[in-house]
Image 1: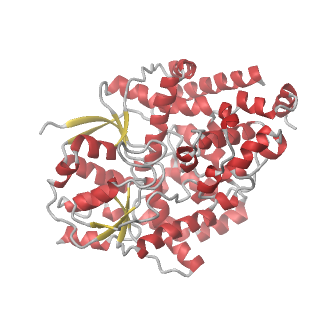
Image 2 (image 1 turned 180 degrees about the vertical axis):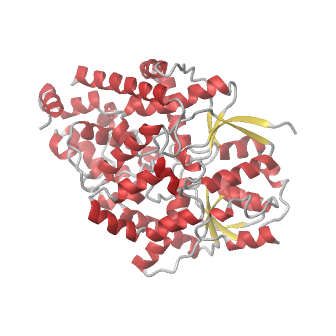
Image 3 (image 1 turned 90 degrees about the vertical axis):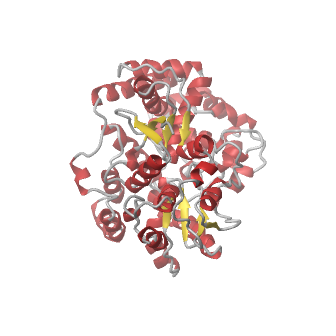
Length: 207
Length: 299
């Protein structure tokens, strides 16, 4: 158990609902779930969730901390917002799932397979480096996410797609040299650093 | 007609050499025709899209969009922000709303922005280009410049997720929005009636990390278009466009299908109907060529 995870688990002494309400984005909405299942039925990745959203909500109330935070479930969210617009109780289901995923990631409990959690982190690291997404580097990072040999196989498999994008000028090999970005990188990075500091300070205070 | 001025947030995928660079081409073409002036927000940054939450969390993610709104308020004062990308629009609008209703988050975002010597007033409306076309231009005025009506071309209007949810377009329902069909009719083409996959998900960012699961969704979107007799799909979203277009070869391999369905932006469709060339419509950016539109453009 990571130090942050230990501290959070200890502080709430088994009341996982309280922990979620305090630390998870929009977590105060969890108690509003009435278990109708519309969210689960509306999810395009529904069949692949280890526990669909409706179940996740109940598991939080039942104190299934370990099972929820280490679940692959929330990482199946495509951000389609079907659940959010259909919820009869107006629970922002998508945001709660994102929030749970972020919280699990911060506590070091997010499953690293399948690769969505790792890919999501790479996406964030990619965009914060220059202020804009470098699609080429992101694609490469994705191909090689499980190491060199699998990466070469993936790159071969994806060759036709890369070529199609290159031929239509929708992919630029020169992006590898740096590519697009914001001019005020100093200000941009200082701003994000500050935002991260404020957010982490809030978490430690409650956690 | 006086030009309408907007503060433009193009987003990462719209840049030169990026995956939706052809969207930028057709948008700029139709905006010229419709006297819409898009003034780019200087030094804008990425919105972190829909998958940025995992690494970013709440405040850093919202601060990204807050910076764009602050820059817009500083350089393009008084102009509504307009985005062409669904994720850009969603993130920026979400930030505007969250910081409007949450005074603490608003104060914290401004505290972070101070490090970049910026201040957010958060008084700016955040809109999608299709809102501008529907609300500020109007269907009649969108029809007026049509020089080459796309008669006889049948098109499936694929709205997708994030141009539709959670915010949507005023007056349209989440489950069955009609505006894309109206665009199709406006340029003289025929929409696929009751296209049942119009608001279904293409997998979004999970097309990268969960390719098989996402391609199963994409397959259904294309199949329904074929079932409706469509010659092409139009969409307002860069991720929808890319996901539904570029994986068709892989889907054909996996499922034994013979998909060859062009997926174009509404703006490319309009540009051709407005009498512009294939290049001005960004059709050279099609991985699967939109031959029916190319023929009209060449004719």
